[in-house]
Image 1 (cartoon, one colour):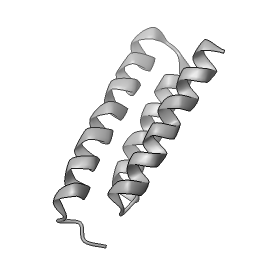
Image 2: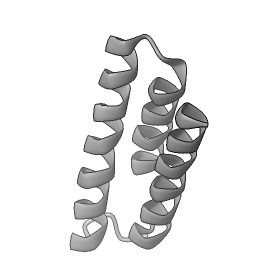
Image 3: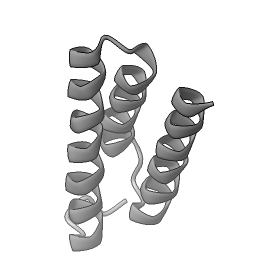
Amino acid sequence: MNLLNTNFLLASLVWGSVGVGYFIYGKKQQEVVPLVGGLIMIAISYLVGSALLMSLISIGIMVAVYYIVRG
């Protein structure tokens, strides 16, 4: 696992930032699903060592949050 890989750092920055956005949105709107989804995305950006896997998991979380909130 190369943590200084440019792709990994960029993916971690992007998905961590999106996770923070979901967390803040969930906290302000007092909705649990986006809040938890944001926390999971933040954790994934720290725990997963592959940029591709991190991106796939994060996109999956975003789709799941969308369908849970809208469905």
